[in-house]
Image 1 (cartoon, rainbow, N blue to C red):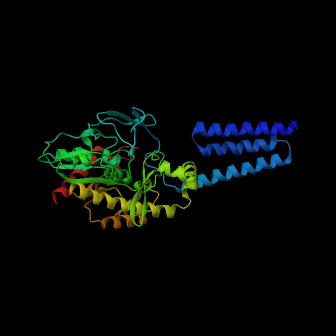
Image 2 (image 1 turned 90 degrees about the horizontal axis):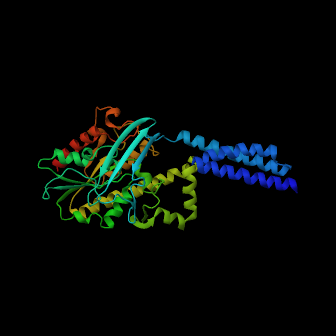
Image 3 (image 1 turned 120 degrees about the vertical axis):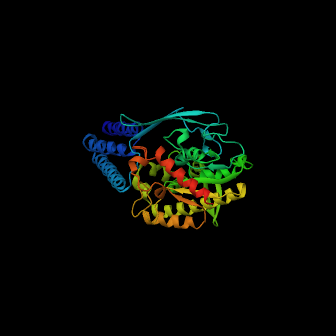
Length: 389
């Protein structure tokens, strides 16, 4: 009896250590390593063959999870900005929003600092106007208006207010064009579709909108299915008979479908779980992405009688086998872009706009977002595209 009590006591202590390490280090992998080590200790410390066999089995299971995760992690591409730490004042930014999940506050400012080890990558202050749009240079109210919608690439993460593509387009235009920068870091096409449907862009219907400009990257494929720790409160869509249908948020869906919630939760911590069914999931993401882009084009035409202009940092036929840190391989990405072209929307290749320049000049060091020089080159190419229409 005393031996059994001792085994229960040790098991409880081991479990607390594993859970504590997992929470403290925010890593299921290290929790598994701890479980394997403690399992070996259990083989020695437990009394009774069944307890020792159970400890050995737990050790084997933990080591198997570690091996599978390391192997899957080795095969997965590494993000460009690995090691970069970004901090903002206020800390929780962008703040929660009941419609889009998160969105900047009107008439606010944010100080953003990014570091890589001891090196300062950037320190910028972002300013927002009364419409929660990032500030761009002023232009007469009667000027042609261009709406910029999208994620951190449109927003201009890491560059000053007057260095974003939207701001640079205003400076390049004569007479000055009025640009509205509605980009928000972390957004996907699902956020943009929801913003249109909820009427968040309706305030610009009487402001001579000449084009709605967005910028796509391969990471958007994962965002349309909520594959990101920051996307739980974001809008979720499904395809019903080829038509987009809003279903609420990703968090709401995961509560309604516990299996989907469990798969997402485990996939956040174990790379090999995330890889299960990845090919099928990517096909689903591509269908959703293309449907959302078509919806954005239709909304731009219906609300503003304006085209959707698509800037793309995306592999095409000329980029050979480069696809950066995308989990989707080059041939599938290229095929997706070919289908996207069939929408007939004006498209601008970032690779073409920045041809001949080195990555060191075009990207913020260690971060991967476009530098001020890069946004200027893209703005020049965008102006030529818009002028030619």
